[in-house]
Amino acid sequence: MLKSYLNLLDHVAIIMDGNGRWATKRGLPRNFGHKAGIKAIERTIDACLKYKIKYLTFFAFSTENWKRNQEEIDGIFQLLRDYLKENPNYFTQKGVCVKHIGDLKPFPKDLKNQLVKTENETEKNKNLVVTFALNYGGRDEIVRAVNKVLKSDKKEINYKELEKNFDTNFLPDPELVIRTSGENRLSNFMLLQMAYSELYFPKVLWPDFDEKELLKALKVFSKRERRFGGIKQ
Ligand code: IPE
Ligand code: IPE
Ligand code: MG
Image (cartoon, rainbow, N blue to C red; front, side):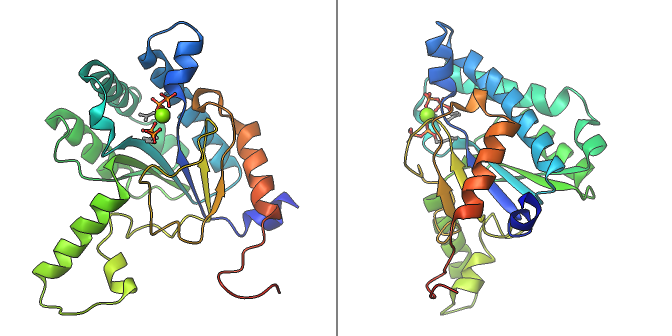
């Protein structure tokens, strides 16, 4: 049963939400929630490897998250640095290829370099593509894509051609999008790519997400009927 619906699922994208509330509930500063969120990322990568999902995308920092205070932003960047640096062979041992989407321009130089280094070192790994959305916003991506087209000599294009200019051009559209913490919104994540995705909004806060929660999501997905504008088969 599990096997048959996993065949229909290549790309799971996750809006990791609820880190702040997880920490606040425990009387801790918000960054403790982000730290616990990294552990949930590790658990989810392991679970996706186990279930042979091919692409896993994490919304880690949105174009709107710059509105947060500097201390929280710096804390998130530091966690990301530590995560990428901690064990240089961590991704390769697991066969994970690391990628990013989003505009890295405003990030600290060392973090950008670290990310590019990790991407280069892991580019041949074949088990799972893990993509981090960093300074990513669906609207920003569309505007950057349109501006690239405007710089070319094309006067008119179709969606397929537009899509080639998205940051996500190396990814299939996600079949399943999960947003944790009980919020029922997209917050500017992969807007066009999820035109036909199945959406799932569990109540669990991101730091508590684990293999069991992923399995629940996969089961929900297996019961959905995807029609793509057609009629029931
Ligand atoms: C998600 O958790 C992580 C990021 C957006 C970086 P939040 O930090 O948004 O947690 P809540 O929503 O305040 O609980
Ligand atoms: C969405 O979460 C962004 C990420 C998960 C990186 P937010 O917590 O920023 O979204 P809103 O503000 O609740 O819509
Ligand atoms: Mg939030």
